[in-house]
Length: 497
Image (tube, rainbow, N blue to C red; front, top):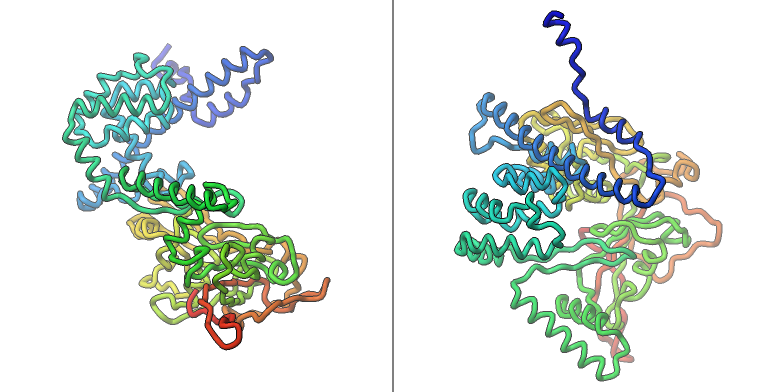
């Protein structure tokens, strides 16, 4: 048998597609014990797949750096855009992609942890915890902690997250107490406050504080809540604590200040009690009834004291029939003017990069200005700062493509293309069947006068004109006048949303 025949007889190298097809053919066991064994096996498979992703991630980073070095990119700039490409491939946000790249590169210096990852003794989350607790150490000390704990020998088998963190933290401190102490001191500089959505039109307001300050703040809220409840307040302790926190932060009873609260909603939801949900920028989708409560209830539905009224304004956004796409606005300016910025903010809601939902910080020309890109809504998109900088690195391109809504195709240096479509505005699904083309004026942004009192339509009567409204409320202090000594402040227009 010749050498050529031997080569032809070698089995083909399996692809990921082959593995997925084979996995799809594995049946669910008929007995309970077999089901548990399969669940365990699939968990091991998940860990192995994640470990293989880490291997490939490191190899991709090295290959990209070599290509950039060959292209003459300065050493300090090499690696730009790598984390963003990894994030796109894994359908994660750019920030998560950066963390995954750092995790993979760090694991190459922790062979025992990496081995436990591959065999399923540790999953990706627990590997991340180990790396996080040793990231302040030098590579040598990190390798020493890895050797001491040796997760692949079963040292951490059966332990929970807190036990793993405690063990790794203690080992790290024994190796280099100065670095651990320095890390704790640096953590104080990372204090901050964040906001993220919670179910049922609630939010999580989170503060990252030094331990002493956090404990003191919580103790003060508990003490005041207990005092208030002892005086006969029928709210729960948690409710009093939450209300007190907001009131003290804003300095206003009920927590409503001059900050605008905006709603994106259809005219049917606003005026005709339709069930189409609305969008609260900075939060997300909220039920129609809740949106109307915020719009028309004194104090936005949350004013516990009744001490403040809210001014009310409406900005009409005209949309194209069928798709619900906002009608374009053009400008000859290099920078997006205020009206176009408002349109992009409402249309895109969050960063338009695929899988990224960070707040919009930059208003970007999809085709850059210096390459002839116009300052228009169709050539504009809202991006976070990181995604805008990534888009400008060599090898990245972006262009708009036809679609029912504004769609951007982003191509990475490896030639992979990812699409991002603007989220549907409220009532988009109803437009195709319910709004004739002739009834939708082809205009841009226009501000309406503030609403006065109740705005109602007869049942079944349709509104003509705009399909979508942006409604805002602004707290206005009471004005004192003759008579009862108090006079309700009149609604007013807002200047900038």
